[in-house]
Image 1 (cartoon, rainbow, N blue to C red):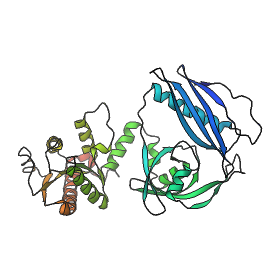
Image 2 (image 1 turned 30 degrees about the vertical axis):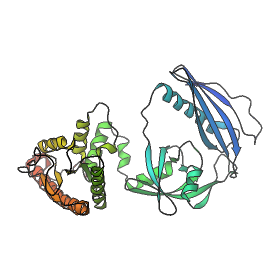
Image 3 (image 1 turned 120 degrees about the horizontal axis):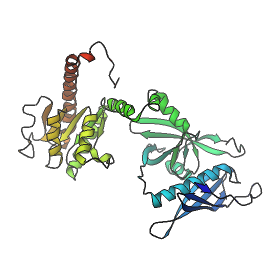
Image 4 (image 1 turned 90 degrees about the vertical axis):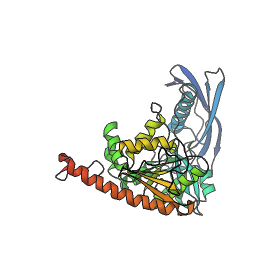
Length: 375
């Protein structure tokens, strides 16, 4: 990456309106400040527009806003402009895979707001966009004075952010950064404090880290299979809710992005291997009926929930007949489905213990108190 230099710096206290040009693999991207306005805190809200020639022959533009604590711009603005320019270049020429990490922000009244999050371990404090804080009605608990400009006072608000089953309380700085929320070092350290074993993962190879994560997933993950359309989707939601109330993590295949070199069938096998056991709603005929055949052949512990005790197809009607690790459980309606899920959990846990005891007796290297990857 190469960039030109700023023009002459303005006097202290004047908002800088620079334009920069950056080079990425021979492609030029310009970035310019199109607006800079002072905030009550003493900081400036800066809007940066980036422009890049697209393969379609048109100039594409993108705008981002951020809070700067130095009215002359400085390294804070320099870094932001370079980052915005690089991102537009990637959008135009690299077609990157975009993964959005979404958490839940608790509003003052207890309701949930979806929160798109970025991560920056070099940023000491977590930040949330001021408009998000206003919508959520988060209480102000103090002010933050940036070390580079202590005269500025940015409001700090108490926030509760949830990621899956993790719940974190953080004093977030109200500032524009180009993302609804940027998770800083304070919240990352808070998360690691509760799970110190995850620190070791940073120093492991991808394979060893994946094996450890798979073993941990095996402790409480349940794969939920079934039809995805209309009434089937409602039943999957009931099953998931019942499992999560019992302290398990229910996953449905289409919750997760595909790995492009995998088929959908391979994706199911991967999640089936990561799961502690499988729960399948057999209320309708769909693609999951083929998946069940694989589960039965491989030996996944699988509970089948059947309305009225009937399979929707004769091809799978006897799938649990001579397999001790597959069990069919009848339910009458959505009203008793949750209680049948708990029955399935109790059966599956018993079957998992039987299997674990058997394997530990059968494999001689497991005798003598060896530690499992999941421990």
